[in-house]
Length: 141
Image 1 (cartoon, one colour):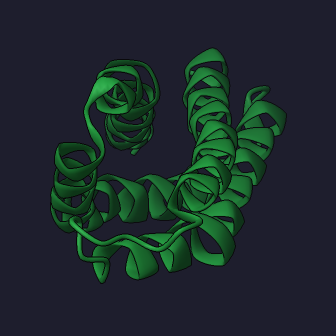
Image 2: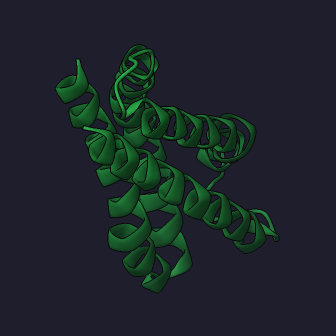
Image 3: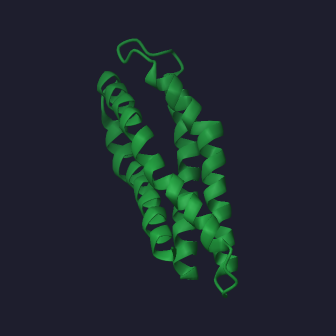
């Protein structure tokens, strides 16, 4: 179960790191309409891909934290990090994604850059939380 947990938590951290460091910079360099089209497309794809790693990462994390070996404290901290990721996602980025997905890229709202800025700050929290969870589960193993 530990290896399955490491696999899915590693995928989640990888997805988050890829978006934070691989996508955000090039996306910001695009003109407004292509930027918004790509962002909306990513939302449509990642809303299915990310949960395919997150759900098993959290479920297996809860299972492996129940052990009494010396790594259980680190695993508990990793589950807390996944819960931070969860709260940030469901209270922050997911509602914003739902809003952005409805935008017309050729006529976004006047405050669209501020909305994206809020999303990016929350995504940074998600990236740190997912990466910390992976590192903690790895250290516990």
